[in-house]
Image 1 (cartoon, rainbow, N blue to C red):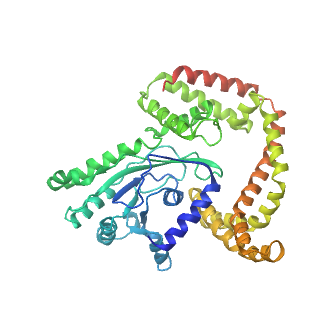
Image 2: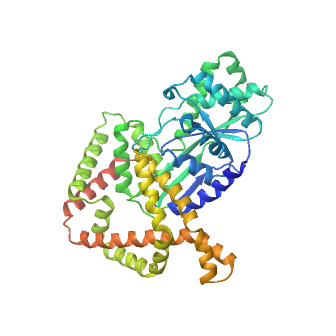
Image 3: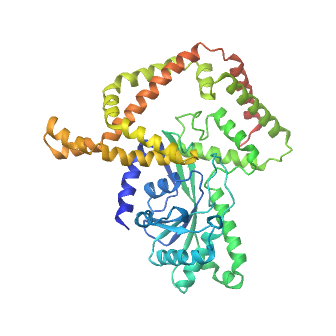
Length: 439
């Protein structure tokens, strides 16, 4: 395990603690080192390897798109356990280029280490809860490794699903689920008789396993309906409308079961079409009134005053920490935000780039405060270093403070809005869902 990988695993894991409110893991392996190929979905670009590498137990080597390997970045990426994989779109002879990549990945497995491969190969610009078809590279790589070891050691394969409420949304939730693994050695006879068919069949096996670890809506047309039902029922992993008293794993199971119910319906099903039209009408009315479903729910259940009181309590209690947070975090935050939004045109990259860039800038920016604390507050470097480590808590306090301030303003606006039509539409849609959807 390389030193930069260890450093990033600790520091990025610490940053993710602040970025996501809830983090859950299902069926996580107990080992750190092994000989397993983990095949993951790829719904959030950079955030996927960051989350998996930093927060899960197994130590992994990442198969990474080759175009990010330059003379400058190559030694850094090598130190982060990254290996290049070449795609046809990169405009190179992928077969020849990947021979070296396969050799290195085989060596990783031979040495008893794990590989992480993003089986979908790409990320959509718009976050959707569905799995794209998997590439065959992971299984092919496993068999190449076994051949290089003369089949003397075992290589396992497991699916891994990364589930976000919303990957770029600060203080949302995410969950990582692992499938049961299977041993590639068990398919030696089939592979030697018909390599192409065996690779195809096992890729399909991995895809089926992965569909058990993620929320997968088969028909893209119904992904919005799926999101709207979760939102109305407040049970799934919608990032805005959900019941916080429900455990994240239970919400994840609801989201998967709901997707399974939608997938089981016939496209001509009148019930499904009726739900789709009703939810679409409700969304259009929300947009016309410039409100979201959670705001309609809060007003219809007379919760705005109590929510405003909680927000005011945050303003009072966090005020001194907010001031410290601004001192320590505002400039790094501003620089990270400008860098991400200027350099990356695709918004799917923004959350992860802002988080990692902000972490680095904040770490460097606040180093002088160690000495200032020692000089003017308390003459003990251990205490000063502890203060430095706690700086992110102050930054989070500032974020919560300003978020609470904006909520107070918004709750006042909502109290003066006439939302009876939306309340009625929401209630009718909720009743329609309860009578139609059986999980």
